[in-house]
Image (cartoon, rainbow, N blue to C red; front, side, top):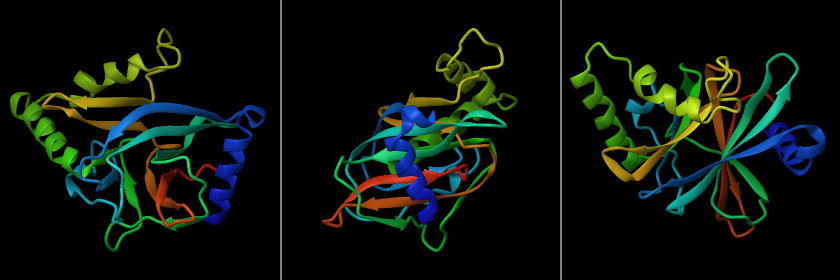
Length: 207
């Protein structure tokens, strides 16, 4: 864990010279302060949220893109930024007894626990009206494509969206590529000298 965090800080400081890029994905609404990190198409029904106190009601979302030799640019880390205060300590984020989550669609997401209720209703409503449909192909794929680095490239399908819920437009889900794809991943709280949470980082095991 410590090794990865040290590499993360180094890459952020040297992103231009090392070839790493920070991509800002926008703001995330956190009305309950209970953060869910999961696969947006597989794990969201578990509704397991990260346990902590003093979470702000909004955070900015960004990802660290690193240029891998085998796979080109990949999202090595994702983060929720609550403040710019220096971080003096890192702690493993826990979902009750568990410390990791599983990705099976090649995507990860951040959302609030309250958002998850409306997101689940939205997904269920789609399939109630389209029992043979595919919500990713029919709805989400064009949204991802709109954020592609090369929209005219048929091989670039896009790697992220900041999705505003149609059934509650004050809430949103931020979805993004999970490193090299499927697997088990962990997140870490970054604490200030006063013990306040400044960041949440999700590590996709590339660094």
